[in-house]
Length: 379
Image (cartoon, rainbow, N blue to C red; front, side, top):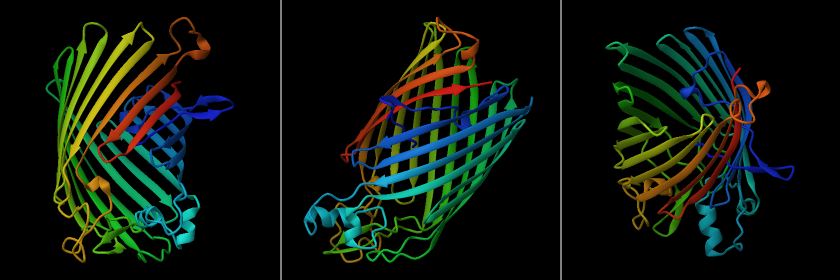
């Protein structure tokens, strides 16, 4: 999930944002821009992103999207006293390279550069993705096809992708991890049905086959009195099914409901419920309210504490996201078409301003405040 936050610039809280994501992009001519994003969570981990995007309609039946992101992640230094139980726990559970215990008491930062290109023609699409950082290189190729049926009232789409990641962990005296590789084969089938003039329904299934290194090579786990490297299975099959329905209401609003069920062969299952209400305020302003509930069961090898040497059949994890937890997200968003209303003018034509706040928290004592403010420009 991409998280964004307002940041101070010249005495004001500002994030400049242009353009939507490629997956939902529809453009008559061109959209281009740049945005800056900032995220900070309850563990004081910060993420700074500089993102440039460009999309153009090449003809009446084709379009191109190009995206670039330079991201800096900062993990704060450990503040507990050296040698204390708090410091030992923080170092052993770190998701960053710590070549020596002394390095854990300084901030750690890592830069990631990402490129994304997608081309669509009629009902076909293809894409390429590249992400590179000092110890991780990820690449993916994708394709999809869409077919309209029953006088355009029913749309069938299918897509697939293949990703390959090369992992070269930095030297770490605690984990001594070597080079690794991970591949992901993905597929999906989606049906979209027009149920009436104001109702749209969608249902689909997705699956992923993941092979290779899937644990954090820098994280250790306390097992039977000692800290040992984390170890996850090298194969994982992930499946989910979802259903969505969009309903336009007579008072200038729309309601979107969604449900997803997820299951994998690690024993993890989950339920997700999404609710969004969009309300027009005049012709230029749309206010959105959002709620998401998520509930997950634990992986078969996940434990609060490992008491047997080797963990569970040689598997062990320090990732709370593989444990049992519930999560909630509340949010609201205001979107204003500046080309309309009392401030409208030729200079503001095609310009839209967005302001968003979201609050996330879960039963594992993790929380985040998410803010976004930005501009989108069409021309």
